[in-house]
Length: 157
Picture (tube, rainbow, N blue to C red):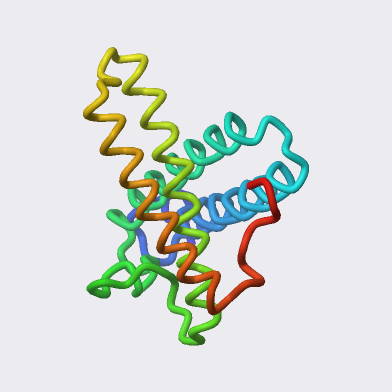
């Protein structure tokens, strides 16, 4: 394999995009673990979880750029209508992934609030809509916790 092939984004056998994708996935896992530690210890919970949510959002954006260039490594679940998680088939794993996605959504929403306020768009109407969206997500999480109490964050979250 030539040096050009090794470093090509578009060559299907190039390890470059696989390596970057793996690094990003690893970073996302570490950030997820950091969220749990922050949540468990109430280490400036709201602010730090918002920052991690923003970082996760950026990671997901980069991963989607990779998938545009290398659709062969795009997880099939991203193409499935209505799918919200990985190619997991065990309903228990699907619940975990759904819960993680919902919690990440809340962190991202908190970041959006900050951006709206900084842009002078933090109107009562916009903030009310965001609050309503977060409440809907929280209610969905509660439904998950009814069947999977082990997924419920520690008290004070």
